[in-house]
Amino acid sequence: MRRRGVSLALTICLALVESVAQGADPPLPTSCELTQNVSGVFTAGSARYELHGKCYIGTAYTTWSAVALYENQRYKESLRVGNSEGTAVGSIDSISRMPCVEDPWLTHTKCEADITREITEPGQSLSLWLQAHFYPRNRQYNAFSATFNYDRGPLLAKRGADLQAEARRLRHSTQPVPLITPTIVAPTANALFFNGVAVPIKIVAPQGMSVTSFNVKIESRNAQGVWTVLTTVPVTTAEATSPSGYVGWGAPGNGKGAAMIARPGSYRVSAQVAYPQQTGWSSPVEFVVTTPNKAVQKGPKMFGP
Image 1 (cartoon, rainbow, N blue to C red):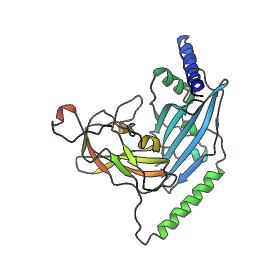
Image 2: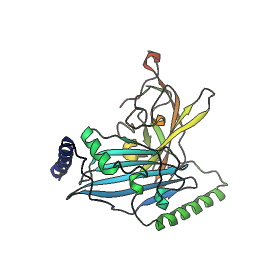
Image 3: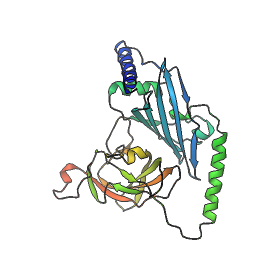
Image 4: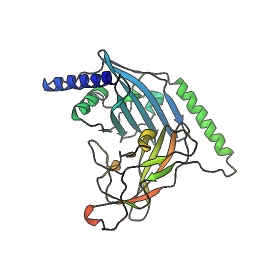
């Protein structure tokens, strides 16, 4: 089975290289579809979705999964692409920089946003292939997973139920209850990093809780000592608990917005469980980004694997 999956990925890449060599655009998929019902978790100020599907290219196909967050009239989408055996082969992260007045996953409205996309998988050929298949040049709006025509009725019903449950919790939260949150284990407090370098973020889920994904919040402190939210990023449990941690923030990359790049200054990171049951935010962990020529010889130890 593994040899067949590798052969499929090789066939796709060879077809891409041949088409590029001949000056032609990479072949687009004949069709894409959802393979599971869309799931959503809602609060008064945000919505989070998980979607799974396939895209067919001739007789071959690729699998894909997406985690999307809609908050403050903007969205973030993390798209993971795999081969026919489900093995991950690439990813695309999209962030809208202009307001989307309505939630495109909930209402199926087109969001003509200025979108930043970063392709994070290795290999230029695969990068071109992903860009051509999942974000062709004629699609200037919407995240990929918001373009499918599925029944929004169950999501609307789920949103109503989630908001009612949230309102009940607020009405009956007169007694103090223990705050359940994940724990940031990396970076460590006062860790030192160089600017333009990825900052590994590792998270431990609350004890006894099975977690699918987290929301990670990065804040910076200005000269007056005021903390400002730079970005909130959806991160899968696989990334957050891997030996290297989540490394999508800090290093510059193609199409990366300023909020995703580490520059000299003071920062802090916090996390919450996003799915299947949202929790409160963890205690923030502060760290410092500096330039190499300002790093002291006996400064705080940098995070490493």
